[in-house]
Length: 314
View 1 (cartoon, rainbow, N blue to C red):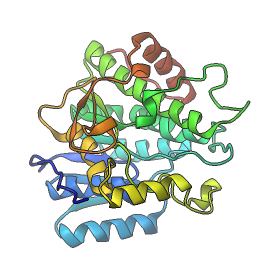
View 2 (tube, rainbow, N blue to C red):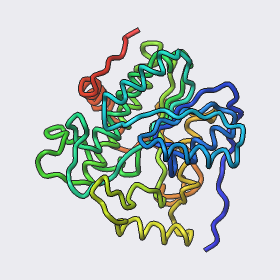
View 3 (cartoon, rainbow, N blue to C red):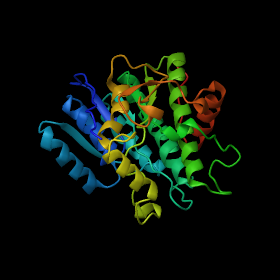
């Protein structure tokens, strides 16, 4: 089946400073490249510096004048997040766009972060919570837009309040859904609190649909020695243009949410095709697990405590 070209126009971002997590490969690399091509100065915090340098070389093949900066970051370590925040705050330069894109998905066995959190909850959610807290003065100075990448997995499931760390009866898919629901609720609450306290930050959500990204591919560091059956099926369907997106289209909702003059805070953007699996990016109705203001406030309070960060009330 022939696949039609899907793309969006990115506005001129000259003079803007952006930070993209997970920018060393996959969607994150594509997002960083498009921002750089539009004139933004892009900070690319990565765990593996060699991989980050290769990513920069790839971007400069199509954008030789791209303004790119590598930094060190391991979202599974709150100390690493704090160190990045300290360095960027010391430099004192405002950040105008923050795209919280990095994540891990469904390790076959329960693993924990350096701080003892279940790895999906700790990396996908708490690491980014800590990052927003660490960068808050720079985000406020830049009147930033913060776009947090969730997942279609957030349309069902719940927060496992009795066992946030899945110490009893670990279930990889449910733990992944929890991490994305929690992160989505946090992103929505960030927008509400920014408006209440005058932080000047706009916060929204995006999701990539379903596409053959690296999330379900072989990840020896997560205990997955080979590609999952799911990713093999996703690749086949994507190649044939059946329902699903591609790595190229999967990055578009986050780019739309982060850069469009019409994108709003407190909203969700994702593919507009059947089942929101693929297709052009558009605004969606919030998934049911993301609609409770009370649940969002609870997630906020617990998360900032666990992530050991503070947010001002003015």
